[in-house]
Length: 142
Image (cartoon, rainbow, N blue to C red; front, side):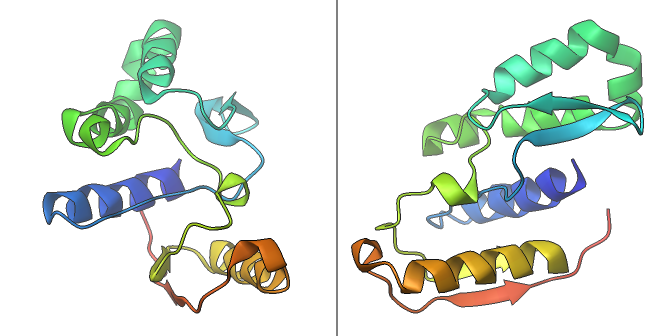
């Protein structure tokens, strides 16, 4: 969830500045902290933030309020995101290869590496209409 928290906070701040913003995850699923470290809450990409919020509220409102997940999901489910079309987590690898991004921000070195590797793959794909992009990693701790 820490990467979701960082990237969605950045997304939120940029939306407030009226920038055209997209955000993505690079994992196989959306993983949020659970009742213990070995029991995360796992959701498919595309699961609406409203559903995740409702699910965690039902599972343990006190725990997920204490650890900040409820507040994070309320932000992610807010009107500013709905108005921009961002209603659920999106997976980087499922992005339309014709989508042109000018800048990609990452908040962990492992995510930077995954994005860079995928962009190298796309560069060799004729269908991708590949253009250069700036990739910036801002190592950020929650």
